Length: 349
Ligand SMILES: [Zn+2]
Image (cartoon, rainbow, N blue to C red; front, top):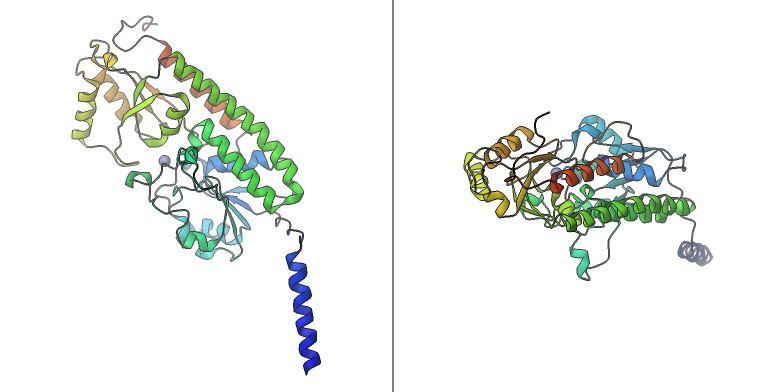
């Protein structure tokens, strides 16, 4: 009896010893890296390029954009139940996740591309990014603390919508994957570096443009452009939607017209230009018509800027860079021309 106990204790000791050693991390289970949103999917596809054993899947269809009010379908729950690794945007963008993950495997690894940090917070010696979460973290609300949608005072989760913060997400995803799959670590980091270099170059181009056009002020459709504003150094003085996805009241529109300081027809008043208000930016999924109406009321030009919240089902790997390059072109043309008050040259064609 004593002998048997001793053997058992010995076995336990050996087991705990070996477990304590650098035990090779289990390889990623093939076929199961699931990404919540389109931009996170696009970044992860780039990072895992060449690691063919692992198929990267997208949970929320790419054309749907931000999942603020997303309700998962039965097929989504099926995908979540099969996933070994889930890559998410974080900062409370995926409000549906804590409940939906009740179907997930207990050992599911969750990569938080935000690292749990609202960018900007990280500038001030904040705690290090937390890249890897377990189910219990999400259940406990670790990734959601104080972030029940930025409309309610939480951090703005649209970090994908500007190349500077997108590059940070790419670095986070690559590091987390490298930790989970050491065999692929070198590849993940190399791929990530290529993408991050592109994104950093675009962030630098935006910074230069912002300085060249003297940091203009804009009205934005909603908070999706906040990080782009920071990259470029333009100032969002007001948003059309006070809360994302909620149509503004007539009173709100009146306020915005008053803010622009003009009620005349386009190009007839200099008030908006004097205040430094130069344009209205709207995302393609936002209310473009409403933005144009406001543009006509205020004399401010309206530009449609794609924050890459959405995209095609099978995007080319450089889809983000292409869309962002087109955005930079639009912003360059928008702010390089004279303010709204100046006579419109070449409008007739
Ligand atoms: Zn959004």
